[in-house]
Amino acid sequence: MKADSPSSSLSHLKSHALFLNSPLQSLQSVIFRIRGSPHCGYGSVNYFCSGAVLRSGREILLQAFNWESHKHDWWRNLEKKVADIANSGFTSAWLPPPTNSFAPEGYLPQNLYNLNSSYGSEHLLKALLQKMKQYKVRAMADIVINHRVGTTQGHGGMYNRYDGIPLSWDERAVTSCTGGLGSRSTGDNFNGVPNIDHTQHFVRKDITAWLQWLRKNVGFQDFRFDFARGYSPKYVKEYIEGAKPIFSVGEYWDSCNYNGHFLEYSQDSHRQRIINWMDATGQLSAAFDFTTKGILQEAVKGQFWRLRDPQGKPPGVLGWWPSRAATFIDNHDTGSTQAHWPFPSNHIMEGYAYILTHPGIPTVFYDHFYDWGNSIHDQIVKLIDVRKRQDIHSRSSIRICEAQPNLYSAIIGGKVCMKIGDGSWCPDGKEWTLATSGHRYAVWQK
Image (tube, rainbow, N blue to C red; front, side, top):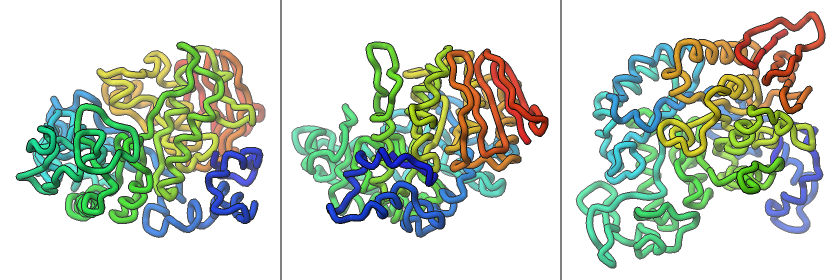
């Protein structure tokens, strides 16, 4: 586990054996690794600008696309929405993969330096990025570097060479498990396409230079690492150190713990895997909190008892390392037209009432914000407004008051309290006034 407050239970030190360099390493230094330095995020590794953003903890992200966006002149569409995105309070907008791709959604890249994609031309992309800069909304690039579609047949008759385009790698750049002459993969395979061998120095050098180009020449400021299970997190650390994004987040997505179709109460091993990944990036990257999503979407069905772990904390990554937990309700994979693991559609405002009032780094999905009607859009904006006005941030304190089947309530930062579910609850004391409310949720402020 990780935690951001000195009150963290030291009973979890056993799970931190992997962080001990030697049996002589003092308990005090392990506690430092758990709690972190008050000055510089975790330890002193955040020595460039990303440290400031992680320390401040006031990010609010918008996922600015869905699975069908490539059909809708996307860069031009988003350009018209930049003012609203900024005025709504978002600090960063995650854009779909910007480079040429074998599949229109962008997740089968080939020529990484070609910025003409199904989302629009390079010219339109740069116009969008310029407008985002003008409105002080950072642009997050979707970094797809686990796999790459080849241009030419090589060893074994596989398309595992990249002749004729920039980064013209040969078969050594492809892992041996996916038809190349490189080493075995340092993570899980993404099937059906050549997986990049990040152990090769020439590959890492080229990827770092490409990331620096996205940062300095194209105008992206933040990174989202796609399919982060596919290669060792130590390479994510190297790429972040090389390209210096302001903020980074990884998609480390594997299955929650189920017993048949029933989600188990404890998801500690699930959140620990995400935390181990972040720790191995040198604590430089946040990660999407798939644990919280999995629990929250069951909790809203009348199982709110799930939202308090045995230590009285939130049960996701949010409860153990909130400053690195990017919370969300749905994305282009779990929701949209793919709907691999969707949040119950009649409960999404309860979901947003939870993540937008709680510690962590909340992420709003494009579909909910722009496609589900003005009422949902305006309710989300009100929740963001309360978060910003009351200065709730990624490390805000939380006291869970109720976690019953039909009711969850909590006080956050001592300044905001909320309830979700159809059970009735309101805070004690005349200092609390209702800030916003809707179907099955209410938020109060001091």
